[in-house]
Image (cartoon, rainbow, N blue to C red):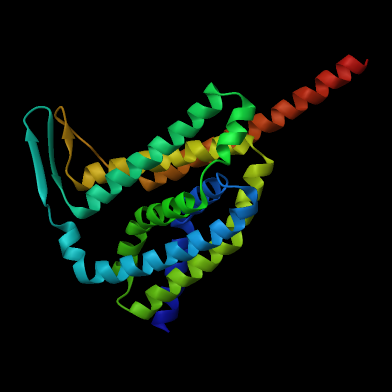
Length: 256
């Protein structure tokens, strides 16, 4: 019976921690031609699941290696750090996500809508799938480490990963379709991804015991992160409804 409890806990954990991953998959698949989006999502999620299982098997064998520092930086008063495998993955992955989110927001603001629409579907299927698989490895690192801490039953951990893959397959197309239909929410999604990137950067800095100009870098608290995301969503929903009410009021006033 213990295995069933562990499985339920791990699936719930994958569902909660996989929200940012699902959002990234939906946005990334939206960058390819519409005729290939469903195929790209399926191949990307399948590759991501395979990568996650491989990561699990690797971490079980090499978990101590990922925690051991392999490079140190010491510039007194400016920067000090001791990097291990986990911290480097978090920093590189977080930096890439921040870059991607900022780049997309910049294109939205700097270009006209027509050029942005064209650019939004200009990415090749292969590039999108590769980005999904690699980013999934970054997103999965913490959840895999947590799974190892929760249970030593390898079968339970693998089944939880497979179930999370099925959930992503069921939801990815719906999320992508929603973002395509409601383009304004894509901006919200990009800012949430930006927060995810900042969180990963702070976590990587914390794991590396990074200090900048005498100040220690602390990991962004998960509760703070989810609160910030909730506030972003609430503000966006309230603003959207308020704008609709204003538009209706203006239409009524002009009709009179």
